[in-house]
Length: 129
Image (cartoon, rainbow, N blue to C red):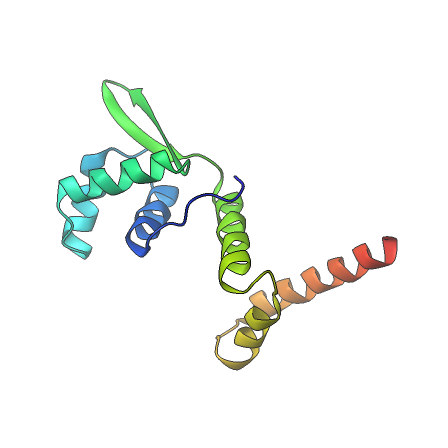
């Protein structure tokens, strides 16, 4: 999934939920968000169809019901969202994001290990170039 139209906070909430609970019907998603966010079924349907139109969800008929699933695996979706954020909000520079991590974010030991591994991979790529 390359750069796509931006998604709203509400759309992102639904997309994350569907990523963890797919394939899902509109009713299943609406029941969840009626309790947590007081979204009406029609609102959920509109948001899900917007996400489908933007290429984030696919819809197929299973056992007579329309069910929605992510168009790409969660990891690919997250990479795409981060790529879009860095490009749009940070002008393509990751430095402000890293500065945020050092000053304001809570990073677990596991996440710090992952970050160290990623930096090592970047250094290796640079040496190979």
